[in-house]
Amino acid sequence: MGEDNIIVGIDIGSSKTSVAIVQRDLNELLILGLGSAPNDGMNKGTIVNIDQTIKSIKQAAQEATLMAGLEFNQVNINLPGEVFFENSQGIAAISRKDREVREEDVNRAIEQAKSRDIGNRSIVHVFPQYYKLDDYSNIKNPIGMSGFRLECSIHIVTVPKINISNIVRTVTKAGFKPYQGFVNSYASSRAVLEEEDKEGAIVLDIGAGTIDIMGFKDGYPVLSSVVALGGSNLTKDLHKCLGTTFSTAEKIKIKYGSVVPDMVTDENIEVPSYAKHGIDKLNKKEIARILEPRAIEILEIVKKNIKDRGFDIEKFSFCVLTGGGAKTKGIAKLAQKIFGIPVRVGYPINVKGVVDEINDPAYSCVIGLCLGDEVTFTSDKKEDAILAEKDSVIRKIGNIIKDILG
Ligand SMILES: Nc1ncnc2c1ncn2[C@@H]1O[C@H](COP(=O)(O)OP(=O)(O)OP(=O)(O)O)[C@@H](O)[C@H]1O
Ligand SMILES: [Mg+2]
Image (tube, rainbow, N blue to C red; front, side, top):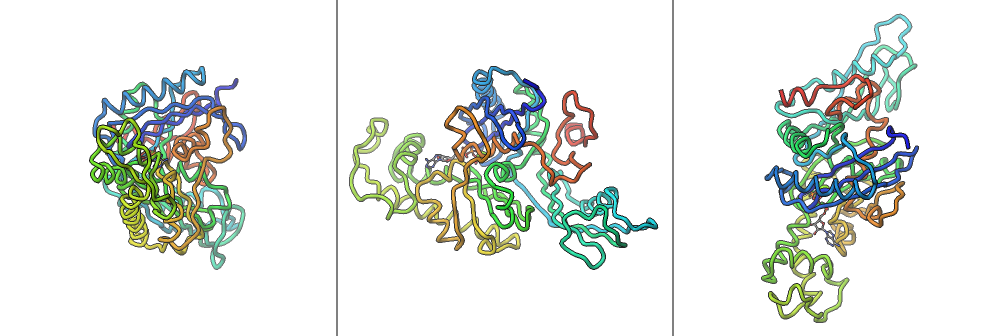
């Protein structure tokens, strides 16, 4: 088996770390190993305990290694936590006699669009959206065309440098070498969207502690954002209202929970043994009545977050929910009512493997990390998402890690 097409992704989440070892075969991923371990070291996308996170990474990696029968060192990682974006324009004059646009002109326009003050953040993704050449607009690829004035429009995603250095340090201490880093929303979007979905989809990865958002128009990202809420907020409400422990409330939520009371029966159910020390009565409709208001509140906050960033959620063609929270019974129905657009649950596509988890939205992010970079990165500027030099491959790379770690 050639090692070049083996890619490993590590998704460090607020509830679990997942590790996927895949073999990339043209347009399909073959999952060779998948591991998952609870993570008590991260809260709402921020590492709060490095040692616990390292433990979780090692445990998940060991599981994946055993399943795949392969050891690895270099990994693609998620960049959790705060995310910022800007849709920006750049201009390059074509001064050569023939006026033919070359790759270097495109890169000059992009460099200009990128040159802005981003303070203590790093650019992690640059997605060209479209180009304009003199009076012609909406050009997808201007190379080879002729004109005087090339304009580009790009989507820049930035994250705080401190977040990158913390995650890089943690993964390195766990014994792995981070190669590429992707924001959660982009990794998940890549795993669940078909190319044509990018004409107008908005993707929400509903995790335990964060909802990672990426909106697409005309094939490219236009919006990247994060809301620091998620499935744990629902569990917390249940934990308080039922008077059980958090972990019992989590089990009850997963087994019996719904965020649409009309979708469940109004009858008492047998109290599972793990909950018997805390409660003596359990009713599905009552559970749904506890969960519904918080779910509505969270979805309204998502809608407002998108609005505050200059977009109306109704203007997207449809919404795709993924992440573990997308498995909440009734969530797509409720979101459809609140957002006013069709909503579906997104599962990883174009993946094959022996384990059932490949059909689980909670693994979208880790599977997306294994897809690596794609053509939307400008041809010689792939370093935007690169954290370190790829082993045994000579390529021009950025120095994000050196910049951050000094
Ligand atoms: N069947 C289910 N019904 C309801 N909620 C569920 C179900 N399965 C998982 N969840 C919820 O999904 C959340 C975990 O999702 P996920 O594994 O995507 O999170 P994470 O990646 O660890 O966290 P984050 O992305 O926020 O850092 C938890 O809140 C969990 O309760
Ligand atoms: Mg996640």
